Amino acid sequence: MSEEKVPGSVEIFVKPHGSYHVTGTVTLVDEYGEKIVKEGKFSLCRCGASEHKPFCDGKHREIDF
Image 1 (tube, rainbow, N blue to C red):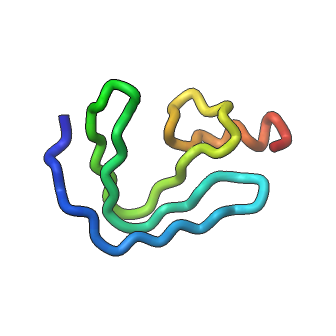
Image 2: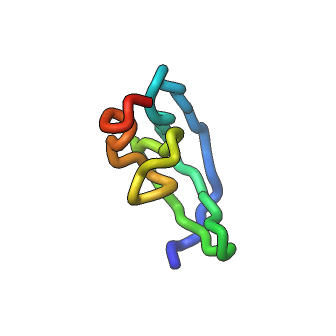
């Protein structure tokens, strides 16, 4: 399990027909209650087709989301 950190300033850009682009430090909690701390820039899946949920793997392009 990742070390728990206090989230700071976060920016989320909603890309039309794509993922959420996130910049900052955030703590995500999965369906089992496990915390995932992410820092820097990453993308979250919005289409539901990613094989690496909750993170985007570009599948939205393949399914024409």
